[in-house]
Image (cartoon, rainbow, N blue to C red):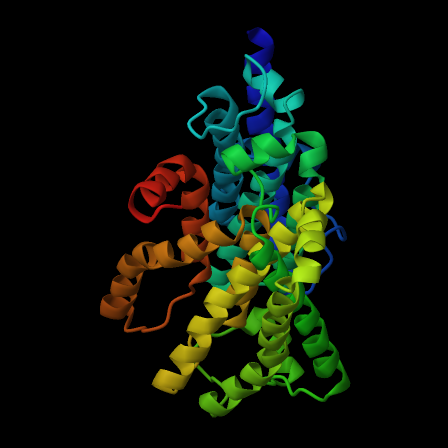
Length: 395
């Protein structure tokens, strides 16, 4: 049992170290600075931070939130990000393997056995990666009103890899019974939609790259990249005809929709149906298509809201960063859960929106943090939500 406690302490400590790196990501990534060089330094006096003053959690407390050289205050954000990340890493381990609040079906009597021998490490890796990156994205969105797409792409790739490899590590029966990873094996039509939409997306991206399809909301480089001078949406906002711009996005999405429709029709042909069912039953194919389908579903639900909201109100509704964020979430948790998370998110955002509207007279809010909270909720309360969905809606 002592080994279990030592491992748990290590998980918390490792989370704090990841949180320290996330602080680097939060500050440097949106400012287009290297994440590895130069070494961390005080933002006020540029004095490099000594190794013994760079211990996660403890250094900020021992230094009382001040630079040891120039005595300039160090934002409490650094401590909070490290603390939250540590609690997330440790809390998820306790939730999945110690208390088994969310049932996972991993073999083993102890938490460590489930983690190492039951294949739990792969499931844990995908979830903590999602949590950590979304924490960084939310912090950036709150400060600068942007979500770096590199963060979303990283989570998306992790989702594709873990879902494709899952059946070799854990086993298909456990994955499907406990809904651990996205899978397309039981949904031939969904798999067909995924393949067709993916082909259509590739066509659209080629059209965008070659200039056949025009991008929406084109901005000058100085308006896109200088996050040091980032402003809130109401200030110095470039003027666009929002309905005209959103029509460009509709044109971009047309090949995606057409590809999905055509693929479904082909998959339902008698000569193709049996072969298609056999193909999507292959472990890698099932996991990968489930993850890609989750990505497309996450993008679709936000993009549809963006399009209809913009056409209806004549003002840009939601940002493309939110589209990529929910796409990344869908690649990890699957189509059903990312759609559910999208409809839960407003409940997290409504109080903050009221506060902003009353005290700061701002109608717009960075929505990424609330989407992230909703994704966290469907992961943690998965079993409870699944029971409600089964009882009331039959799925």
